[in-house]
Length: 281
Ligand SMILES: Nc1ncnc2c1ncn2[C@@H]1O[C@H](COP(=O)(O)OP(=O)(O)O)[C@@H](O)[C@H]1O
Ligand SMILES: CC(=O)N[C@@H](CCC(=O)OP(=O)(O)O)C(=O)O
Image 1: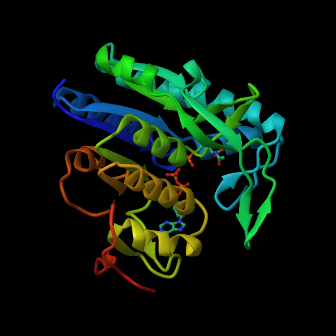
Image 2: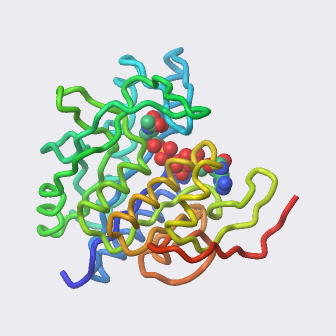
């Protein structure tokens, strides 16, 4: 294999459309054919919420993280690795024997500790939510060396053997660091990081790690773990992290191949942020 490793986070919100999922799978195989080594980490937040609702269980988030009871944890595991991952693996494998699904629990790939959410400067108990503290990338590397495309569900194992629900952005980031990935590409359902959201759709196109660090405390909901993931990635040695609109055809090709275009790119270092001329309102 010639190319470097690219970790791609495919968000649950970018996966709501069957056509988009098929197009994403085609693009990932295309990347593999160019010689890159794609690793997919998938989300599934909306799909988990839908299943919880069907079962009459509550969905509640604190600082962008799902409050996860033991009952909810069973549903998270079932939906992520029993449904969302299976579907994605199936779409990729329409093109050949490429994809192999696994979770962070497999071969102790991701070890997590229970994490609180920080709300108004105070820790809040959010149940079985994990922060990845150790990644053993051996299994993922073996799959890559065998010519496979790993598709990883964001569930990690605690030292106690307990399964923990990990935000997929943070799982992708931890894996990208451990693999020494060239890039981390996060596909979501907005054009990138908006400055002053929800009052404006002005995309911040370029951010250094230090500038992003300063912005993090002001970020809300799903963007908080995503940008925290980008920050951890570039500080951990990943060359670039992109947040791109997964609803746009071939966004993943653009991000992984390093072509410029709409979206937010985070790089290591400390220059100021650069913004596009988007709409404000
Ligand atoms: N500053 C921001 N810029 C863009 N989107 C934001 C911002 N703050 C919060 N959001 C919300 O974050 C969402 C993306 O995160 P999330 O719902 O977790 O998506 P994904 O499933 O792709 O991880 C957007 O749809 C938007 O509603
Ligand atoms: C702790 C936590 O919040 N875990 C997430 C895992 C899935 C995820 O991150 O999915 P998206 O990328 O689609 O948001 C959840 O339960 O929704």
